[in-house]
Amino acid sequence: MKYTISHLGYRIDSRMIFTFIVSFFIAWLLWNWQITFALFFYHAEHLKKATSFDTHFDLVVSYATVLKSFFGPLCSAMLYTLVAFSRNNNE
Image 1 (cartoon, rainbow, N blue to C red):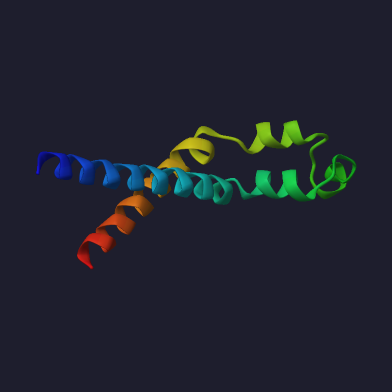
Image 2 (image 1 turned 180 degrees about the horizontal axis):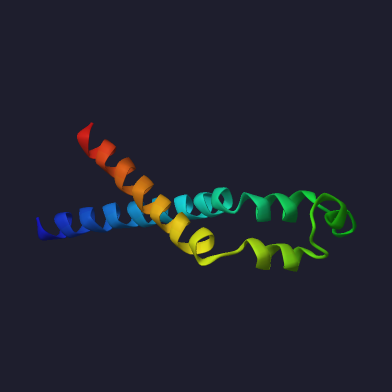
């Protein structure tokens, strides 16, 4: 019985960690949509016309703050993970 309970706890922990990591990644992309959009869709030559930045590095340095790069995605990921697992436990 002890093995089953500890194994169940491991499965819940691993599912929760995976959900948290994926939701943190998605939240980071959404919180930093300007960086994501510029990196994927603006070629280096067209970046100056579309934005006021000379290089992609300048854009990232300008938009990357501690709030938008860490705390915002972290709080969003934690909230989503808690809501997702509380909804699964209620069903």
